[in-house]
Amino acid sequence: MNFDELKHKASALLHEHGDKVEAGADQLGELAQQKFGHSEQIDRAVEQAKNFIPGGE
Image 1 (cartoon, one colour):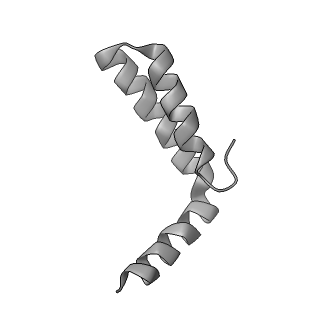
Image 2 (cartoon, rainbow, N blue to C red):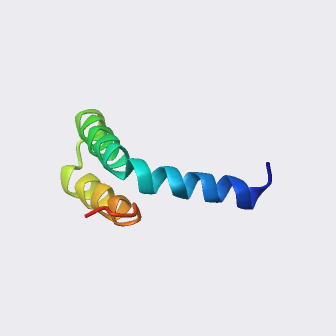
């Protein structure tokens, strides 16, 4: 599998399961806040990451 095929497959999965990826990003953000604090910075990073998810917020 070359890079273009992998990229296409990953993109298709994001389009199909974007809601699950967003939920995972939220859970990861909560875990990072518990471990490291810095709630505002982590919230901003999670929201920015979710902007890259097709169909996301």
